[in-house]
Length: 286
Image (tube, rainbow, N blue to C red):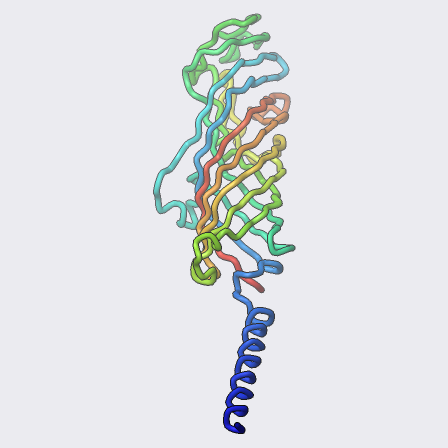
């Protein structure tokens, strides 16, 4: 009888001890991926960009005209070592972001979406306004009044690019949700998350413009602002490393674009954009 009671008592003690151990593992030593609050993250990658048509207004001392529904494209680099070459990283279209999780799900971050915007050459658009340059000016051949007049955007008339680049410097609030449970994986080995966020920022382009034969102005300049939303998937490996795919869309208003060496020469435009991104990064505690 004593032996039987002893065995029951021992089994009960082992069960209680096992329960306490499991509770300690859950509460005091959770998986690294179970909580994000207090972690930092950084990522780097590339993008492709798609732009709506836009009306672009050009204004100076001797001209004021608008080009209607101007089309533009991005300037992809493709798979290239420039993405990881420190001295050539600004040549392709890139994304950089640094952020901090202030809760387990929500982070705040700052970053730069280095897009490239190239007006399609030799397209025909409607033009409204006037040009009245001095007789000896190279662009005087285009003098006149225009009212829904077809104009071929030849390089001699206009080259218009934000190619170094259409820099969207922005801050974002992002929500991350772990959906690994539906797959039954160990999240400290592989973790699958959904990502959704919204951002605001300024446009700091280096605009490459040749307008009416004038000398171009090719310096960085704060030209406007933008707003965006995004959604994507995040795949985290071995707790600290991740690859993330995103679709990002937004609206850009650029009301103060420098176009020539003359400070009086300016342009303005607004358009929507869609961006697809693939970035790699790390998540860590300091």
